[in-house]
Image (cartoon, rainbow, N blue to C red; front, top):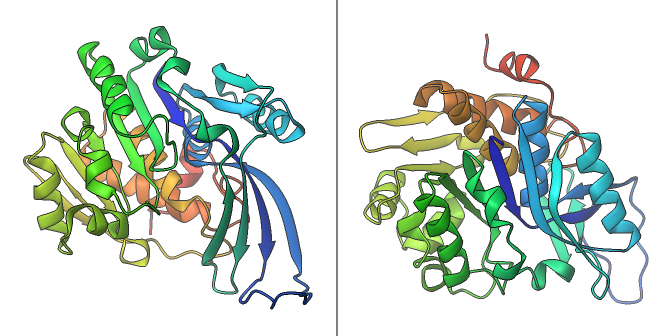
Length: 307
């Protein structure tokens, strides 16, 4: 297996356009409604598969209808689901995504089975047999975040597996305290610029990258939305622009960026080409409602880069 995507799996219930929320007791009508499977690990896995990468999913979902939906979509997209656990006691996670007229989003989230995903759920044989282990959704997996994630990443590195990690917003405010045990065991770290600023207390991309690389991280990629991305390794640094596309829904764009970056690593591409693919995958994502509907195959994604 090329990539194993470990982390949160969610059903996204999406409404658009929603620019304000009604007062208590009031009704507001919106025009579009859809349901999609989502969650960082889900989105990254499906995008990787669409780009032609052999990928597996590892996480926990309920035995409810939403859980059935998540598994069906993964199966339909040729994602290996052997490491997905079904939980009869807790419902599957759900996020209500309110998409504004400009494509930006607000979220209301029920954690469900993601709240009990733990180190005991890990399929270590599958981790050891993967080229890359990607942890997706740090800060919203309370039984896995921190030291348990660090132990899993260390196990993967000891087995010669490349490790990658992506965060979400930490509502607890414990940014570095939670993540610091993991940092020495991460090879590729791909947070958003806002998350990285909270984590490091810095606001300059080069300074943020240096701060993180002092822990031993080999590659830092900062997702900066309309400003593109900044990527740094021990020998190179690069700014990649955000490609111009018609924005419909920005949900999942960061996960698509990560998938493009990991795909470039799997294919052995250099830093520039890998970063461009990541940016192109993120751009493709925002052209349709949902986290993966806008993603096409590798050749079509590369067309976004070409003038």
